[in-house]
Amino acid sequence: MVLVIFEGITDQDALGQIFDEYFSTQNVRVALTHGDITARDSINPSNIRATVGDIVRGFLKRSKLKAEDLAQIIQVVDTDGAYIPDSSIIESTNLQRFRYTLSTIEGADKSQIVKRNERKQSNKN
Image (cartoon, rainbow, N blue to C red; front, side, top):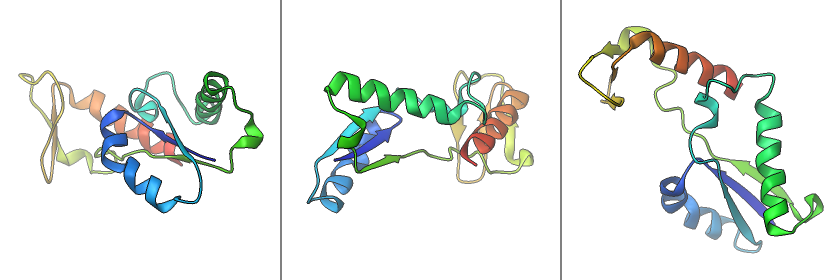
């Protein structure tokens, strides 16, 4: 069995069928993290693996499966602009959420976006 970990239902909707087709000879199951774990304040390089392990263990428990039942685990994450230069981050205090363009990220607090991007980068290495 192949376990694919997605951040949310929209990622699963967009990519799930591709994984089903690619791994057509195996059973593909899905776990959701309900958001980007690489961007969470509580996640850092020292605990990212344990966090993913907790997700896998939770899936196994809910599914009444064993680790041996898994042939492969794939975690799908997006970069979400994490690698753009800080000069491409625009502070716009009238925004409640991030706004992405082809060349910028806009948000209410530039320093928070910079910190988020640094966290995402370090958690993906």
